Length: 135
Image (cartoon, rainbow, N blue to C red; front, top):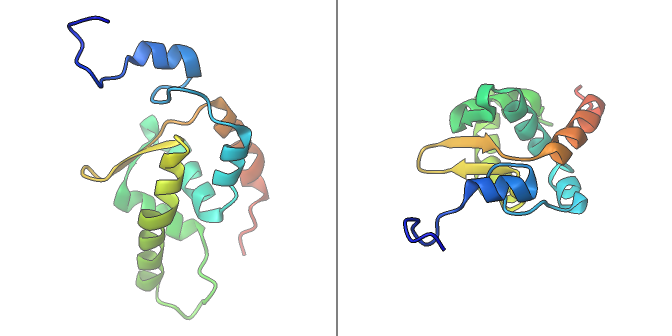
């Protein structure tokens, strides 16, 4: 082991060589990816990140983009209330699931989310997104 490197730090070059994606130590299974994109909120998150410059968005910007894309089933509900519900769902459910699947990097302190998924995730997203129904 190179003594100049601190323990616990990742060798980015070796990660890229193994997985083909920066930030992931190994490829994830198609089942994990399919489970991650099975939810409309998570597809909206991944689509927003995929279309962002540098595949990174600030948390508040991501909330706005997902809230705009995911329609509230109760049309009478106020827009602010809908955005708050999306904000809570993203923070407590959807972003942790995508991070656990190693598709995104969610820096809670900085409030930034970055897409770190690989080619498989991008291909599946391109296939699934056109079939999302927006009423």
